[in-house]
Image (cartoon, rainbow over all chains, first blue to last red; front, side):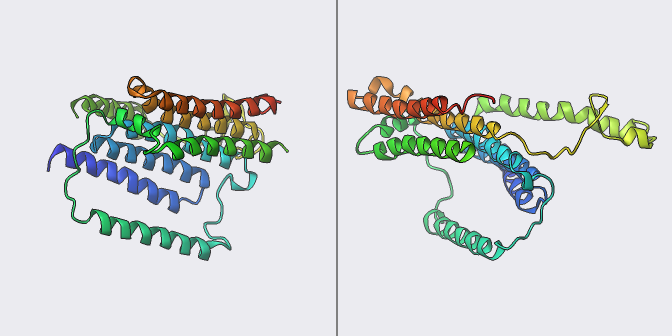
Length: 164
Length: 117
């Protein structure tokens, strides 16, 4: 029982407990707060995998922006504030979608990661390699530029929906 | 991994510091509740209306603009770290990325989405 194992256990409890709180909470606002806890746990797991940049991104984007955006989405929607029914008419569709996602993730986990017991070494200049790969035509150039167009479309769409 | 030890210690202390007075108050504080003490108040004044109210949609627009530029930072940070090793093509690609998102900011600005009306 090393220190790393204990920290992993604590972070796993944060992640899974937070995820359980998200689905079990009757109040959608509380579910969003549980989501923050879960996302913090994932940031801790990234640190254990020696990926500090991903951990910082996890806190900056997922906790700092996306969780705040979800919270505000709930706050600007009148019917979602306060306790709501946990089951509505769409629950069979949601159950099928959730089962499909779980099956896909389970398949990937068993298929790709079953033989691996230790994390491979992280290169020391990983961040530089990532930055160079973003603008390399043989790397991630197209997704990099598409991401900016996607963000532009998201902003325009939100402004059109919210104001007009 | 050593440098994360300090962050872990700070995280534990920052959670324990607000939790300690609440727990101590729960454990050793006297409890004599009455109707007046249990009433909901805000800065000593009684609250008006429901607490779970709908908020202005402007909050959402501001959060979304923040999200867009937050993600921009995530993409540009590795690009800036690798800046000295990039060919001219790579630098121009980064600039195009910034220009597209600058267009998003100009759109939000010209549409008046950043005004609090």
